[in-house]
Amino acid sequence: MLPSDKLAIIDSFPLPLCQPVRNKRATIFKGVADIGYNASKHLWFYGFKILMLVTLPGYILNYVVTSASVHDIKMIYELLEECRQSVILGDLGYLSSELKKDLKREGYHLWTPFRQDMAEAEKHNNWKVMALRRTIETRFSELCRLFDIEHTLTRSLAGLQLRMEQIILDHNLRYFEMN
Image (cartoon, helix red, strand yellow):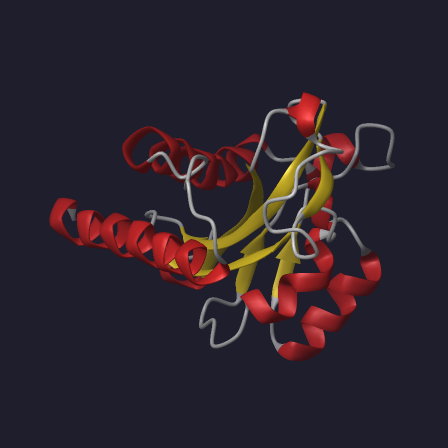
């Protein structure tokens, strides 16, 4: 086990801009937003994806907004800029031996669970580490419940950026207030 200041958690969540039935007809943010798949809800959506890096206690270190179809792995280096935590917990979306090797050269250790059909999965997928990963899911739930982050109602990229900055600032101020 490592001290919590050496650990960060990385994950993403969808930011849909319309109901799935309108995915192909949506024109808001045309050319910037696109259609992506939300694996946890088994749903295609039109919009953006927000990737976040969060400390174990719940402080949001960094975030990146991408179009919905961009794979999480492609944005990991931008998300880890100036990250002081050396151990990064990810989900199955970051399962890549090449990525782990590249991050190791950068001074990071990326831990991801193994798929159930992979060798050593039972031994590797420690329930305690998996429970630590749930911290970021809790943060996402708070962002949805307290700040309605999934419904930004913005119509410009500047408005979207401002709304994200406001939400994250408010969340992190609440973090300091509670701790």
